[in-house]
Structures are given as structure tokens and as C-alpha cells.
Image (cartoon, rainbow over all chains, first blue to last red; front, side, top):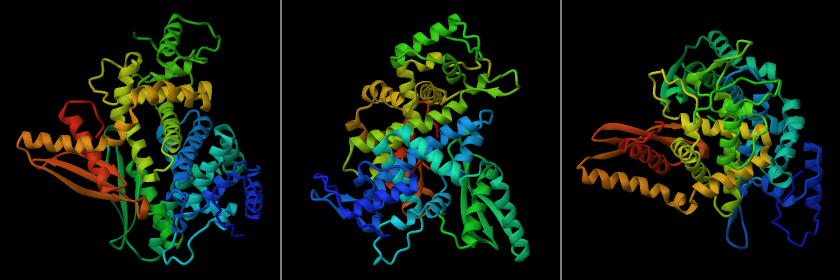
Length: 248
Length: 248
């Protein structure tokens, strides 16, 4: 379904595109949206940026900024309560897995959000992360429409409990590094991890690690530990090798 | 006032340290805390880490992780609504100014939070960011104790509206780069900005810029634009030159 964007309608007349979008949100997230304008905006990719009567350019990037922060907060709350004895390094690592762009792109597709995005199809560019971006923008719209507590409950019920297996996620990092090493042995390629930069200092220091396969840089990872950054680089490389959409 | 940490007390007896801390919170944030244990924990710096009966090491780092996310969300919401016509690049930049460690350390001291922190004074280390860390942990405690909406209102009333001048913050970046350049001209020193790394790709790409004064690296900044990263590096350098506590 391609619901066309329609600017804010103060008269409150309901157009057929509003009804379609309301039904789609109801089936994806389980509730009836209030202010449908917010949801139209959430699916307006920057390639399809529009201009208001006042000359302001609008797309889903502001809502993405807001939704990204709300999703981080909800994930932090969830992890804090789910893992009461684990330290903040573990919580940080788990959250970065949950909210990774690759993960959000995947979930966005599973939920059918990709079907609602309004892109400029005539543009020659590829929009590798537009699904994850729209997903975050949708969270932003939900938050503005229904408030934090409702948003938190919806994210838990409809997203975290449905699409995430926490046990799998805890052990997730081991898999990707092993996968890369097994794959490169099979393919007779050499893999090498290089620390290319350090950001911050003290116990807030983060490492940036690059994975090279046969001396070609494939992807970079970032984390509070070198091990974590290697795993992050391995995961991105694995996705790249397998042709998945991923931000590098 | 030095309130000593006391582990969770299921019997609910109120100790004099609880009363003291409740009064301090009331005067700093304007409300009476419910679960005082959370606030004791918020002020327990990692240098004074304690162990529970179950052998779990506790300090304020988990609460800091949570509070950091909540503060980001509240700041995102505030900026989204305060600047309805500005793009997400502006919002991101403004938020990074509001929640910068240097800013949080300063506000923490202005609010008197530094007086409540429990450190290991025998340790020889310096704890440059312990004030900002405790500030975030306090937000985490407030969120768990009173919920998101109350936390948001408290942050707006007691922190953002009292300690931040948004107009000043919007123009903030110009000041630090100018300050550094004026200072170095006065001191007959040469300044140079170098892009030392790039992270991510596409419109999510961030730059890391280093400021060198007479070829000595002073500080690094990170931002979505080179200009922003330069300003960030200039601000940190300015604080370093002036002997302020700052995370590099």
C-alpha cells in the first residue's frame, strides 16, 4: 500500500488516505492513532521532502531524532529491569545490539513498515537505512500522539517481546566473529582486526576497530572494549558480505 | 554534608541519613523522594563500590546508564517542541551541548549535587566527571521513583529553565572557536584543526577533529559536521586551557 503524504489538515476532514494509514497502524502496533498527521510525516523519507505554505521543508528526520531518543530510553529501562545484576557495560552493549541500524531495518521490514514509506522513486540513490529511520520516526510519532507510558508499553508488547530473543542477543556477539573466521577459512582469506582510533578517555573511552579481509577494509565497529568493537565490526562485515543493508 | 551510603532496608526503618538525604533532594529538586535507597545508590561513586549480601558489586553506574538515556529523551522532546522549524542536525547539536559532560559537571556543582557524592577519598585517582555522572544517576533514580512524566517536568522546571539560556546555547559554538583564536593570537601561538577520523557513512557520518596548539594535540571533538567537531574540540580545549574539569 502506498499512502500518499498529505499535509496537516486543521479542518479535521478524514481523507481515504488517513483511513488507510490508521488501519495500517492499528494492525502493526495495535492501537488507533489520534493525530494521523504525525504518522503521515513519520513515513515521509527525506528524498520526498515537501515544503509547507510557510516555506519550511518537512520530512521524517525530526521525528526520527525524537524517536531514536525515546527508543533508547525505553530500551535502557527494559534492560535495567530485565538484567538487575549486570553492569552498565553489559547494558550498553545489549542496547547497541537492540537499536543497531541493521536490526531496526530488519524489524521494520518484518512489521511491514517498509510498505508505508514514501520515497522519491525517481531518485537514483539507494536508501539503505530508510526502513530503520522510518521505524524510529514512527516511535517519535507514537510518543507525541500517546505519551511516554503508552509508547513504552507498545514497544515492549509489540516489538521487544515479539521480535527479540534476549538469550540469543546476549550470545549474539560470539556468533558473528566466529562466522567471519569460519567463512574466511573456507574461502582461504585472511582476516585482521585493527584498532584505528580511540575516542574519549578513562572508563568512557571507546575504540574503533576495522576489520580487513585480505587487506581490504570491510567495516568498522565501535565499542567501549576492543573486543566489543571487533564484534561490532565483524557483525557489520558479515552483513556486508551477505549483501544485507547496513550502515557502515 | 556527607551522607553515608546505606544498603536497601526492607524493614523500612528511617535512619537519620535517610532524612538528611530526603531533605537534600527536596531542596535540590523540589519533591519528596519515595524510595530513598535509589538516591543513596545514585550518589555512590564507583570508587566507593560496595558489595551486597549476594556478592553483587553496586555503585551508581547502572543508574547513570539509565539516567543518561532519560535525560537524552527529555532533552530531545524539549528541543523538538521548542524549535519546531529547525532541522534534526540543529536539534542533535543543541542536545549534545546540553548533555555534554562539561555542562553536566558544572550544573551538578551549581545544584549542590557534588556535596552528596560518596567517593573513596583514600583513592589517589581524580574523578573528573563524577559530578556529571552522579547527576545522570540522580535522573535515573528520579525516573524509577516517580516515572517519566514527573521526571520530565522536574528536569524542565528545575534544570533546563533554571540553568540553561537557549539563546546563549544556540550561539555558544561561535564563542569557543573565537575564544581560542583570540587567546592564541594574544599568546602568539599557532592553532590548527585536523580531521583525524570519520565514523559511519552517509548522512549519519560523524567527524573527529583534533585541535593542535603549537603542534601539541589539546583535545578532540566529534560531530556530524567538521565545523561542529571543530567547535566541540575548541570548547574542550578552552576548558582544558582554563583548568576546568572535562572529559577529552
